[in-house]
Length: 320
Length: 275
Image (cartoon, rainbow over all chains, first blue to last red; front, top):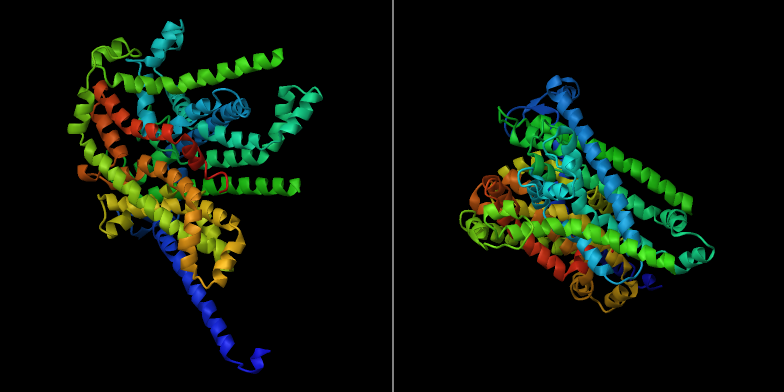
């Protein structure tokens, strides 16, 4: 009704205040956006572009189309390293998925009910996650060293001399052993995530099942696991994303070349050698090829995350 | 009753066994760093009989651990403060500004949780050179801030969205501007969520090895992680020193963790559980 008295004024004030609030909001967002785009999103997309170029040093200027990718997939110089790295990365990931997450589930199940010393155990299990991956890697290199052989000394003392092996020196052993070292470090993550999930399950429900005579084993598989589905999904995707880009532990325990004989070479070490450090003996980084490796890693991650999103969406829909 | 008793014994057995697997390497690490080389080989598990600080002295003097610690501290503190400031401002806008733009930007930030920043390293090296920051600790700070944005916006936006809306309405009726609301109401309430984000990023930044390895060469700019890797390479045959270097890198954070275990666990798992 006031409009009839002064038709223009309130509207103008309304508009300008809206515009003003928009400007305020933009100011809130701007610093984060500028830094995020300049130092993360931008470089990621520019790496994609660089993968179509070649040239020595830091300025790959010559456009070569898909030739880096063709080399990566067909040229014997690149192909075996590339497919080797992809394979090892998947093995590294699967060992985490199986061993780390099963152990995590076991520990979480043991820790989910109240008992004396629970917090101490949880604190200990999680402790290695706060260490630098590099320190963990170096530490285990020393412990597994056959000369000193803290581990081998124990095995010999336990009358298991045949098991006292040069753990990191054998091609078929090094990757599983390094993966297990990394499991040692990170098992606390799935443990506490599963713990949180298990503690969300109502005690009455479990009690009712026990009254009906269900064993703990049945309760675990029939009640706890189905209810843990969302947490299982989160743990799976975290394991995938975190391990698909692992570098530090390999660098510390097997060097940038994934010794012995490239048997522990992951996508990240391959990327580092090719695009950043430069392969011996030339020592000049091939940035275009490095960018192509990064893009391929990106694609695998994208496919993995998409599959995960598809299944977790479908699960959500199924639950409703 | 008997079944419960047996299952409790099993529980303690399994958990104790794993705890030993965790503690044994840490014990050998610390205890052997105080022994001379020969004793490390002869008796790797006992207390040091010929106690020595030679490893630490070497690490501190020839290795310049003093510089590495200060560098790591500066980088971590500056990056963390800016992540919290910039991230909470963005999160406030993402939570309270209802528009299609913020929906898109929220997803844009969150996407970074799934895509490791390392994949853009080649372009980052070029960018850092253009900015003339190569071989300086200041090249690390903007990268770490960018790296912290996804988790900060994810955790903080969820947190602000759960705050009761009447609080904001009441402040608006009183004529408070968005800035005043942000500083006087939102920021103090956000403290627990900020602590979570801070711990998550603190561990990532303090322990990061990749970017120092790629961007930094000279001694004055090294961080602890880079210093450890270079010294460890040099000391490979001198185990007292090698173990002292690793202890110097590991023990401060482990002590901090023992003091704040609950917060650490909450912080480190923040990426998975909302708020």
